[in-house]
Image (cartoon, rainbow, N blue to C red):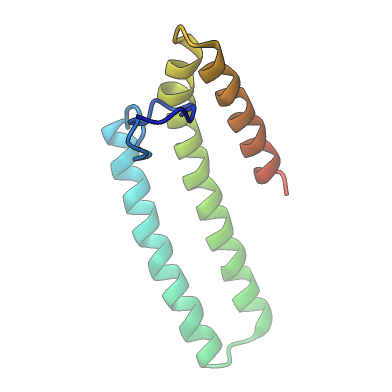
Length: 111
């Protein structure tokens, strides 16, 4: 057992796993990630074929937006399950750690 505060209810062994993952969200995220993977392969092909720069940049923007959508889904799941479990627990230190984690996530996403 470790003294580290694990805000999202991860196992004390250090394995970081979500408290719960909505099966529909998981399936949706995996589908989106596979689609994004295909888009990135398409970008590589476009660069290799020396396609027009603005066309490549437009596709890069599309991939970035798709990744943002994945992040939104994962953040919603994190808030709904992991964060709410940590905040509702009878452990004020875990709640504080979760608040810090959420603030860090917001600032990372705002860059």
